Length: 308
Ligand SMILES: [Zn+2]
Picture 1 (cartoon, protein in one colour):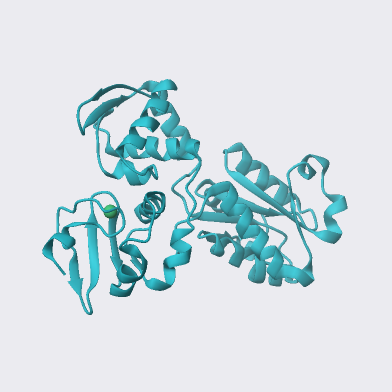
Picture 2: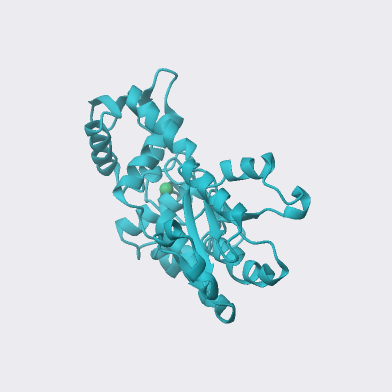
């Protein structure tokens, strides 16, 4: 392998500051200014990384790797990596805003970093510039002095407010809180559908063991909801605690995904019924698992875990 090849990122094709570290049978370790740190196998490089990806696919994989550092790309990952979907433009603006905050000096002056490209799932710096223009239209940044490759900007007061709001809704959290009826009859639905559905979407699940909490909502439960990215609320048996936890989470601005067992749906409070509830039945748990994972991913995008 020519030395020049070892100075090019195999995902984003960008220039590397440090050469790819090869080990074993030419597997490699990359530290890319844009994608961050990841590994790849020789087969993956041959099979699909080298020239069979579109610029959009490269941008999506780069964006995904930026959130999943130290991932090892293998040839079996080809179809999943190629089909990663980009977040919406508004989500990308939010991601860029958070990355600007991370890179900002104390008074909000930001100097361009290649990480802005991956954090905002952009194909190139021009797309970052377009997103910055959109942020500027919303008065979240200003003073973007543009030179050939570099541009600086300031985060405005409104920008900092936006960043605080985004951080409050726990964009960086990977935890899904499960609020449900704690009854032995519900054990299988948790173990076979709710928990694996959350894991399939790339998130961690957190379920309270009420036996440790004397059957009441205490500070620990509230703290766990506060640090979650979303809540899965199952209304089967209509427990007051579930309504309370779901309402509390909504008040914090967290997404709540509503589910209920088929035979119990008619008793659902009217104000909950208007939320597109996932209805499940005990004899179709694999179906519930799939629908839950799909709902989570379509609302929040994929979580950061063990993907693909
Ligand atoms: Zn890269």
